[in-house]
Length: 254
Image 1: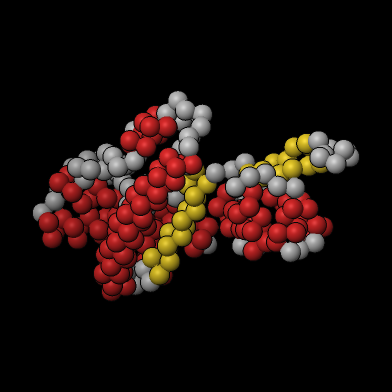
Image 2 (image 1 turned 90 degrees about the vertical axis):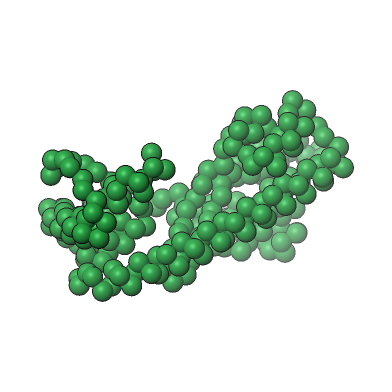
């Protein structure tokens, strides 16, 4: 399974989500988790072992306060972001790794509104509760604003895809053709994985390549007729499919 498959499989379980929710705040003992989540310690250990094998959590032995043998305490190891967008003409499911580094290293990738926060905490081991509350409030506000913009972009993407899908349905007769075109539209700036598509459609590699070439030439002709765009080059030139749209529409795709 891929990383996102593993993550979704692990986090679909409510008890594991409750465990992770507590561990991200501070390390816990299994008995603590059992009492807080109200399940048996045996069940907690089962879930912790699964999470540990997937590198989501780790454990270390610490001395017992009661003077007994050392006990295992568990903490979170992995930092990821999972995004799922689902609807008509819309399916995006991806795992994104969060960037590493201190505040100043992150500042180059931050929105301008959050840069002062990174500058204020850079080089400091601790900050006061009041400062932390203010900074987190500012960051959450910026996140909400970015989420609203992303939601609008996803909705616009869905509208565009819906309008294109109508043209795909009317211009391509076979399921195989439509699948290839939709793959092109889903990843307009990346190389199409013909091997994966070949396996999905249960076609041979040569048949898939031939079908792809037919679609490419067909789109070239149709776009050329409508826009007057001409691309000159050998027939075996490896161009991304969106290059067929013409240079003026590809200025930002480098």
